[in-house]
Image (cartoon, rainbow, N blue to C red; front, side, top):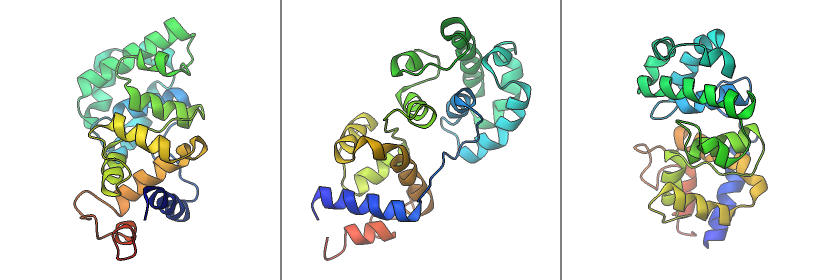
Length: 209
């Protein structure tokens, strides 16, 4: 298979497996999605989803969140790990959203990435999932599978993102990045597949590939 053939097969099979993928983080709107993504750094989505209901019951808007103390936020988000920094960033980004953006989550990469705790991947999630702007967030699952499936040889997520954007049209990025994440979690795991075990790896590395 050529790289284009591999990419087309992967997209087609993932669409069959996950026809209507949804973002696994519980949220109500762009702001609560932003907070959830910030909490997900080095933490599982399952753990984040266990924490955010209590947090959002207390404060689900920038105004309410910025009115809390860092200690109050920290007490709730502690199970997510790195809680002192995450609590501080959540409070400060909430304050800045009010100060700079009239209480609305900004809709540009530049403005999002200027918020504390918001890097390019977090901004990409917001842009594509909250605002339907073409973006391709690359997490550890996508990085691993892109390398395993020989869609990219990039040593960094920046390189992998660039390679995947060249292979797939922008209107596919919204669903495709979620499909790869789900497949990486459920089938082609870091330890459960050696590049020859899961269905897609078998197809790509079979005698006809």
